[in-house]
Image 1: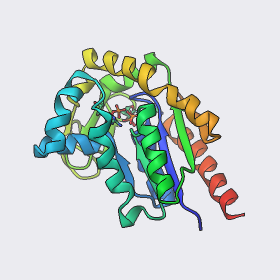
Image 2: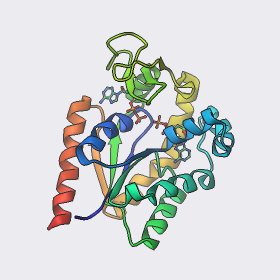
Image 3: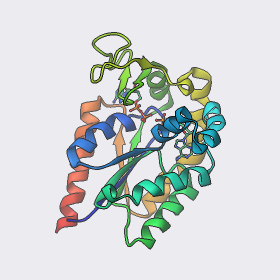
Length: 224
Ligand code: ADP
Ligand code: ADP
């Protein structure tokens, strides 16, 4: 069977992480979220974390050369040999080109870019109510997807917190950065014939159904 090399695109708050948690179960793929990787590095005080922290606090992107190595290391790992799901990478044309060239040198290529679209007013509401668990980054929303017990993760019992960069002043900045630096990737992947668009304003289960069907089709086409 062919590889399933997928990336998730979309503004902050579109539901990439929410959908990724479902897709990894459907298709048994290793999942690499650059935001999670960077937050973990900041927490550990590693060199990557020290380089990334000030950018993240401001809602800016960390420089391409800081993030590309960390991602390619994972794409090259044995567990990703049959495919992977990237969330939050690439976020610039430079990162996209780095990824394509690196995959190309290894005789690999992307299967699809899954774009989850949502307007600013929706994502601002989602980000301001987002909560994540400290142990495993499980996702909740105070209004749309509350935990059974306030402030506690249903899955692992750890504490739920708000990300620093989900505070309103940083959210606007991150959206600006997305529209300027990341949205052009949609056209880039459209030209390559890899783009699949999904309406992120629908409820999570519905978005999931659409994405799952599209990925299943990709797999079938690949097997023909
Ligand atoms: P992203 O990874 O794209 O930044 P998340 O998956 O973290 O987005 O979702 C952002 C917030 O919105 C979370 O609190 C999540 O629970 C909530 N959310 C995700 N998808 C939906 C949806 N389809 N409808 C309503 N709320 C959603
Ligand atoms: P969201 O889930 O809300 O889209 P992420 O968790 O993916 O946000 O990213 C959080 C922050 O980490 C970003 O605002 C940025 O500072 C940094 N970051 C994540 N991925 C990248 C990337 N590919 N390139 C540069 N910076 C990144």
